[in-house]
Amino acid sequence: MYEGVVQDLIDELGRLPNIGPKSAQRIAFHLLQADPVDVRRLADVLVRVKETVRFCELCGNVASAARCRVCLDPRRDPTVLCVVEESKDVVAIERTREFRGRYHVLGGAISPIDGVGPDDLRIRELMTRLADGSVTELILATDPNLEGEATATYLARLVKPLTADGALRITRLASGLPVGGDLEYADEVTLGRAFEGRRSLDV
Amino acid sequence: MYEGVVQDLIDELGRLPNIGPKSAQRIAFHLLQADPVDVRRLADVLVRVKETVRFCELCGNVASAARCRVCLDPRRDPTVLCVVEESKDVVAIERTREFRGRYHVLGGAISPIDGVGPDDLRIRELMTRLADGSVTELILATDPNLEGEATATYLARLVKPLTADGALRITRLASGLPVGGDLEYADEVTLGRAFEGRRSLDV
Image (cartoon, rainbow over all chains, first blue to last red; front, side, top):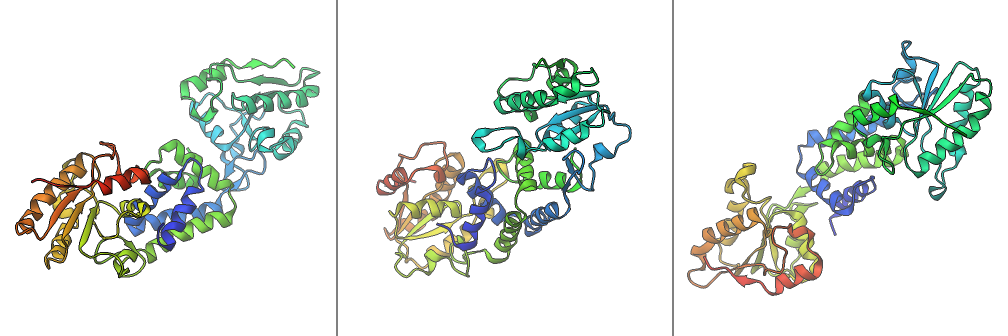
């Protein structure tokens, strides 16, 4: 319907998550009328983000160097490891200031319907981190929905042999998080309480 | 909360219309994990759109040359002029295939609350186009909401002197459009019927 490049822009915007065709059109027209400097800045940051942002070689979190800020921080407790699905979950948890351990970012959750199996997640890297026995508590902080629960159960079973001598405790965030929702949408207080009340997982 | 450039990206995305902080974060993480080629294509189209897209010197519609496709089309009836708020309204009307005249894009509607007055719209350009008397019908197709109605009333009063000798008829799209909504969201049939049933405006 639109002339060349305007339609291209609408198409590209429509490929982003949560942006339907009407939103894409609205954003495109906003950009058409916006100050070229502002649009240039958005274009630049898109290029820059792909050039500079990496994923921490240890935990998989977003990083601007080989390791992320949490992994580089010597004050973080290396004996408590919190497993989350995504980097944005790290940010949500950091915001509560309840947690002083380290993270492991899986890169998603097990979801057969989306074709995501255990091999698509950073589970082998997790097992490597647990191998030296320095971690004494593993918090499974995957989302409190179907895929997150399935992933937590899968991990709990996988890690169970390491708990035999009492050297490792596996915990799951307390309920209190609304079931069926996404961890990233929880408010600080709810998420903080869920951390305080985390319970041992029976497998 | 995020490291440098990731936060910059979230901030830039959050400045776009209809994108709240959570959506901005979700889109940013989608882009972080996306193929660099796809992100590059989005960045490129943003730059290209600002470099190549112009506004038609005659009607104010989006154009890739000095004049837009409608103004360049010799088959379009120059005696019927349809006044709309935005270029996206032109697209919505073109989709109905009901209208064979030409357009005039105001660039918005009168809205004191947003600080938009008549001088901020392309009203002087409209009066210039009407000056030679070649237009015999002026369709005021501003949005059927408060600002759009106010703009239509303002224009009708301004243009009224030209209607004295019967040379110009002023019309407004028929009701049938849901009141309080945006013209761009109307479906083709509703908008087409509104065109068919357009009525003279008494001022």
